[in-house]
Image (tube, rainbow, N blue to C red):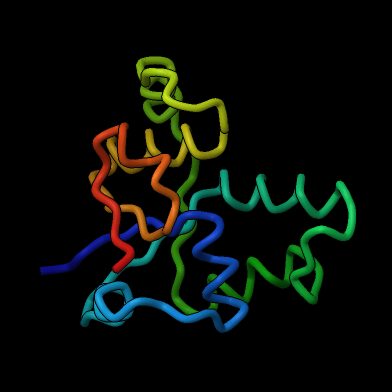
Length: 130
């Protein structure tokens, strides 16, 4: 059975920087048939962080960064109206708009989130990072 996964923005950045991944996370990402998704919201978040200055460095233009991610097998998850309707229904556990949208996409698309951020947990999404 194919397992779909949704990378959190920070998980993508860690993965691209060669960061250490826990065993369970590596196993999930490398499972045969794993479909790894990247939300367009993450691309938007990275674009905003890059435009604010040198706090975030990815080593190449954002377009090339995203193209390389897609070339490596990541699938871009577009933002659909259903995702936005779910954002409206979500409780305000925190105010990060990007995380709220990624949580909504996870719930609607039934994709576990790959990432360290425990802020997702109160939304009832499945999170993989161990």
